[in-house]
Image 1 (cartoon, rainbow, N blue to C red):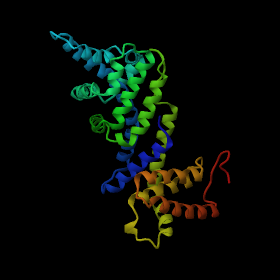
Image 2 (tube, rainbow, N blue to C red; image 1 turned 180 degrees about the horizontal axis):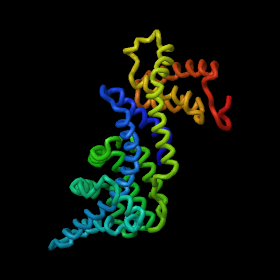
Image 3 (cartoon, rainbow, N blue to C red; image 1 turned 90 degrees about the horizontal axis):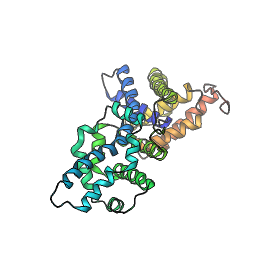
Length: 313
């Protein structure tokens, strides 16, 4: 679920916070960095737990509706379409899903009123109503409605996104990665014993190590990286160079110099993409020009050493 671009973004955000803190503690921010990476798994489990709690709310309201003197057949069907959804049952009966959602620090139990309000909105949705009131619901349809529901909530529901932002500070930054993982997981659910969840593994550990390494080396070599940048920006008004640009330049140069397994072109392309997301409209061209000039000089002086097949120039 984690990937190198996400790691770079997390390191960038951590370094930005570090530079803005006059009493910054390196160890504190390193812990925050690793916590933010771990938090991606937590919010992923949190999203996957939502259908089960929606079912719980629908079940309670179904009991209330059925207890009425003149219950509404339509309302009953709307509630039953969630309560009797077999796909939610597959999730709930999966032992790994049970374990991970139980251990997740984010709890829907604390936000039942929000789930009730979301269910009220859902019952007005034409797509959901069409599904709920249909006479036949195939297993594939029951899967699709849950997947569609989660994607619609993440994509455009203000209340759902507000709650995710309140729960997980970096929700907007992490949403794309999390929802991609959620969708892939939901597609892989076959039965109650299927192995569909993303779990921290050796690759996760390697990426966490990359994050720690990149963060630490940028700070360790800060003076050297600053000198390289200042040499190429002598004619620039330092006050006009965005802090974000400086951090991205330092990170890119750190990778070029001290990460022998990452190709220079990959490093430059990655930071140009991050600049488009997090810096000024002109940052991409500025960063590209500075990096291109510096990396050429570093190569000419044999300071760029890359190892591995296809990396030795």
